[in-house]
Each structure stands twice: as C-alpha cells, then as structure tokens.
Image (tube, rainbow, N blue to C red; front, side, top):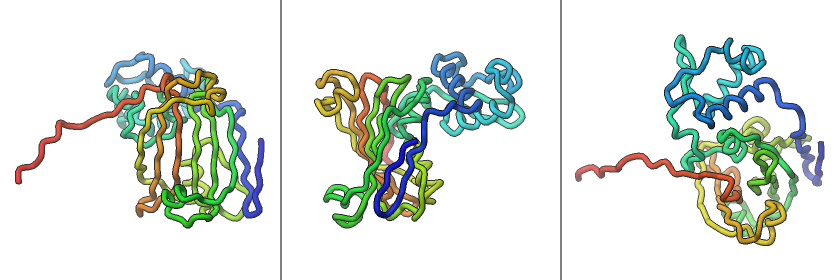
Length: 259
C-alpha cells in the first residue's frame, strides 16, 4: 500500500494486489464465458448449485457474482425462473453507457488491473475551473491511473475533482472513482457528458503503452454530474484503440412528430 499526503488531507491508495474474492473470481469466469458466447442471448444459465459446482465456489458466491453481472446489464434474473443472458448489445463497449474503464475491460471477459496509480493536489487552471465550475486556483485532486487488460496497459486516466469534496480524515482511494465518490464523499453520479477525439499515442505515452508513437488512441473527455446537475468530476481517458471495440448503440429510426 502506498500513500500520499498534502497539508489538508491524507489519502491512501488501496492495494490492488490482493487475491480476488470467490465471488469476484466467479463473476470473472462467467464474464469470460459470456464473451466467448458459451450461452446465446436469451438462454437460461445453469442453476446456482450447478454453477457453484462447476466454478468451485459456494452458492453464496455464485449468487453475488450473478448479481454483479446483472448490475452490468449482462444477465437478467427472473424470480422463480432463473438467470438469462441479455441481448448481445450490452456485451459491446457501447458509448451510450456511462461505465468506468475497469468495467469496460471486465465486460469483455478480460482481467482488469492497475499498473500505476498516484494522486496530487494542484490549483485549478482555467480549463479545470470551467469544467468543475469552481474558481481558478481552487485546490483539485488529480487521480492518475494506468489500467491494464490481462496485464497489458490499455488506458491512461486522469480524474479531477474538487478537494473540497474530501472529508477531513485519512481516506482510501480504490480503483473505482465512482465507488469512492459514492461511499466516501456521499455523492452519486447521475450522468456524464463526453466528447471524443481520435489521436496518436504520442511520445508522452508510447513508453506507457509500449507501442509506437503513431499508434492510434481514443481520448474521452467527460464531465460527470450529480442528480442536481452540478459537476462532480472531470476525466480525461486515453484508450489504446487496438484494445477496445467501442460501438454506439443508436435507437430508432427517429420519426419526428407531426406539427
């Protein structure tokens, strides 16, 4: 476990090297099978006892794993009937769903990890002040992470939020910013507004990704808002293009109403 300090608050970055829980291992195994199309869309999964025996975990762990997959939109649980595979659409990295990089990686059946994580407190520049609707010079937290997929770096993230959101005691920063904001700061994110920009990896990140500088990446800049439409955080994510299959799910066709 590593820690960093400022004059106002102490933040500990949580260790990510611990052995996953039984339910986490079960969920990951099921994600991999869903990604491999072991079950078709609409097909019922084996019963909880059967899955527990197959995966070598308890029924409680299987139940927790299925609940996690349901929250990700991969399966639906019907009382008295069983658990069913959802439509194929939630299995793609669709840009209409506001999910973190960790969930994007896991939903593709890969093992998500963090190769590097650090933070610093810094004064807000004009861009950060505008994005977060704070004053220039106000203290903000810059949370930096390198996400891995099967131990290969695929995403570099900078998440910025006002230091005023932090409680005045030692806190733990885990791998999920949304979980941290909810559980530690008591702030729920209702929606995000993002812009997308294709770019080259460039010399600054070529060593992080271990790819040539002219490799393509997708930059996603997003402001997340609470239910009252107040900005909570601003993120800049650089995704290695070869590692992700982003798709946009478009409903419709849209038929304008007659005036």
